[in-house]
Length: 448
Ligand SMILES: Nc1ncnc2c1ncn2[C@@H]1O[C@H](COP(=O)(O)OP(=O)(O)OP(=O)(O)O)[C@@H](O)[C@H]1O
Ligand SMILES: [Mg+2]
Image (cartoon, rainbow, N blue to C red; front, side, top):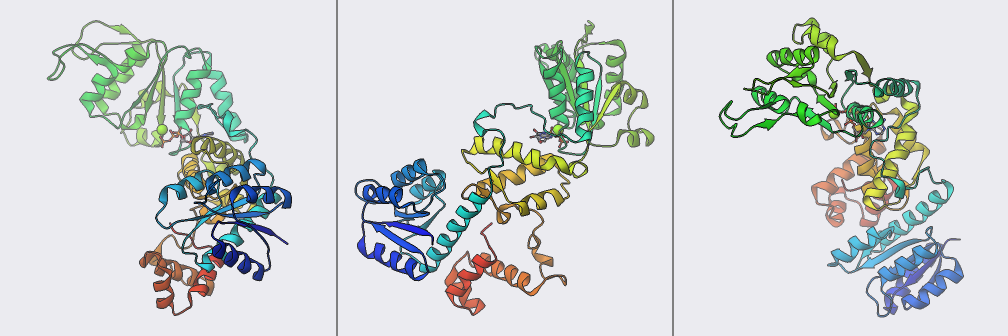
């Protein structure tokens, strides 16, 4: 039987909760203050602690800290005052599983207890998924992946890093083109020099030219002094030309010349400056197609793709997904001071099956959002916002849905429309508030 400890200085609340829990079939213990509660928690090996926040002596947040230090698997639910947003936020940050507000709603308590205990069980069944401690996350340029497609990429990075050949990286959005460009730079002979990135879409034609090559004073309105361009700033390092397909025909000519002659002039200037940097260009468009359509110079295209690296879309290397999940969870945990380190098989399957049109970036963002929403250490389906049938309300009631799916969607819509007021929602749905709560629980409906 699961053992729950209730700590509250208010005897009537303590008794109410304990009696209710007993009726629900749990073993319930209670303590009137933090110190005796902690002793009891340790001696009796409880599964869950429900503690008031404001108490004389040790307060609830201190109890939370000590319980977690004693045994991380013990779940904690805190009871907060209605207006106390700050301690609620703090409680969640410190690893409370949930909080319930005063005045107590018994159904809310029931759901929170049930979920906390489920979480504990699930967490104990799953072993930690992370292979790297999140505290070790400082490797910004770490490329993850073991599939043959990625090994091919590593091989190319290795081949180009010992020289300064020009590299063209192509691939869909979010596949890691910039990451690869940085790796080429930092793993090779350029590493002690600058890495200078230029986004070719971000600037107008004339600005881009001066941005790349610099200008001399007075060469155009606004050129009040001499200015070095990115090619000069990169020195013997790397210049990364992102979205190269967006460069205008005129500028394409100029770039071609730089690549052929290995020198350039500042806008309005006469002195030739030698180009010593390595050029890495990236594109998410199909350059061969643009060449065929006459929108990108063929000669420039060949000058850029001395070596070309093709980034595979994520859906073509599904076996890398668990590795990437591991990698990003570690990184995100470190960033958010969280410890979400377990993933259910169901969630992993869903992540593997998703299309990932936004590729690795989309995966990273999805995980970030999920970790933010996750209480406890297990990444749950309900927090992974992909492939959900209710994401498009217009066709929510499509013909392919089961009755219970429709029920779930409808309940969620009515809840949202009424700002999650359960009384009102229950009235509209013509069900009791407890029934509403149990349906929210059953369908795992969450507030977006
Ligand atoms: N193989 C990988 N291992 C680890 N992180 C990756 C990997 N691929 C991509 N990422 C991460 O995904 C995000 C997107 O990568 P990046 O910016 O390099 O993509 P991109 O191809 O340049 O995208 P876009 O075309 O949209 O500019 C970054 O945070 C990057 O660190
Ligand atoms: Mg990019």
